[in-house]
Length: 341
Image 1: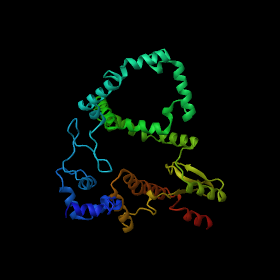
Image 2: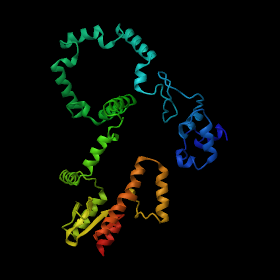
Image 3: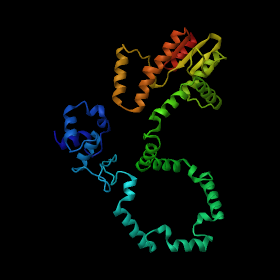
Image 4: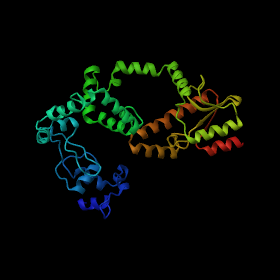
């Protein structure tokens, strides 16, 4: 086992990554590769980083130019120069470079205060900054509306997306954490006992749940798929009184469909997160699927596991305890068969 083996295993002859082999579950199936990647460098952060470092011959672990902390790696195997925006903007060399550039172009170190800039604005707009002129401001709004169909260009999705990236930058995140720590004693306020207890009290209040359900029905904001819409059309042909997102005391969940004329609750568990079949902990197919989902080790799969093994099971058990006419379908063909019979 050596660097050449790793490069040839994870990259094709043209140097392009063989994506399927970068998956954690694939790497961990080969113990020899695991041991090599974990021990190849003085610091191990991830399999992918070790592979990229081997490919790009990066022997020394890169550190932030400002604070000396380890820095993250890009997908192409290159590293950032700084660990955060804060370090980047506080780096003396970078600040000096900016000052020299400003002096070169504008004659002074702070280009925001440059005399020529202010003189030009006063000459053109009568003020030292264009935004202080109401006519200029209105013209900007008009231009924004013509170009983006928005009075404020910030409302355009692409610009919002870029702003969100900055808002969730490392620097912004650290600032939020400091504020929360000083104010609540925890970087995440909801984890403090006082706020956590209040949230639980609100979320567990039946009246709040009913109010949420009524509001969603009113606004039509329930998540619906095309197959659910198709199912509704099929059900309505045979049962005109069918209702969507129905709740009752016996079944306090937002049931996909309820048919009053035959007093029947219907759950359409079409999406893959419902497992494609009921979860029964003793069945081998359920055990295999659960282990496969756990191996993904992501929040998305964790939520899917909770939904399939806990929430769906709770609904099933409650319907049985209350002797409800309750049916679940895992694809639309099952619904069609039921309707035809």
